[in-house]
Length: 403
Image 1 (cartoon, helix red, strand yellow):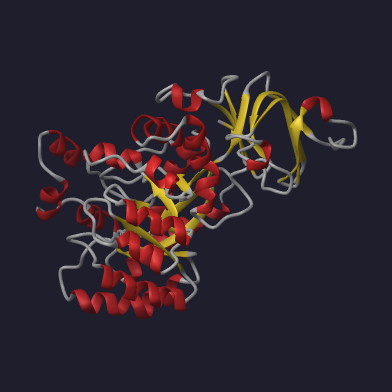
Image 2 (tube, rainbow, N blue to C red):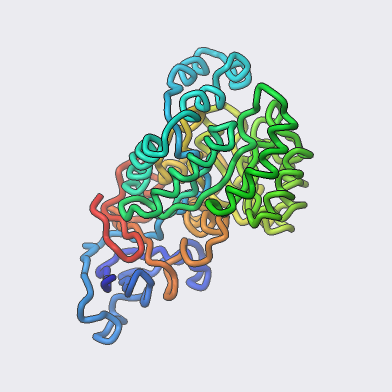
């Protein structure tokens, strides 16, 4: 590793609460790192010869803004196949539930993905991860969930794990999501296998265990049983909760001490209060809510309830085919009640909290040097320039990436 110094930054958004109101802006700033770890984040004028190592690679930000690298804490990045026909069908009036009942939805992706090799799965996921990096994402969570079979789920985790060794994609956190699609056969026997063989073998691959708690998917009781088995194997719970209806998933997430509860489109005030009191991060997925035509995620209500709020893409083939965190920031401001500053914090510090990561999502000494140099002097253009190409350079682990 080498040292890195980014100079002449117009607005350095640290997302550090110690720097004052969000997003903790330092003007006319510099950022210095050694061996991938930040050693200085402050006014450029405060730099001296002792702060900047003699061997540092220096980048002139040329008056651009710099923000932390985005932490995308909810994706389904490993899949094969295409569901563009469903996108058109929903536009023509068919509902998500009607499409699923006719064999589409998650089951369609399982048919295309479950038989695939690790090589094919990793290749498809890498292409999407590269697009994420170009849009400023430096850490991404990747779920299994398109297997409905033990070996298929493990292949998906192994494919995602291959990305960890690739310096040209975001850093990867893995999540085991076996309770996603619903099997045709013995539902109980499938859950038995997940709770015994599944969690045991996933624990050597993943950090988290997730489930889709929803009408037509998995009940609160089934998810709770799965989480008990997952925790016994060292996997920390995350949960798809209150997306299409209110099922009690948010209260389950609070009760079992989940790292995050995700979606929450139908969450009530009492649900959000419980999550806030339990310290469960609320992961909002405004792209999926928009595509499916449901109520917007409860951004303002979640903050008012004391929740740590995160934003994520939910990148998947059926309900939000997007790799762009800047677009999610725009949608969050437009639909969930977050301010631009709150959306930036949710896309960085909040995402890190939703993955139980304390070394990123903020630009301060001692943290991992993941940062994004924008192509504008104004950080607010991340959300304001709707769908705009506002990223000039991405720094991942102290290494500048050409994007």
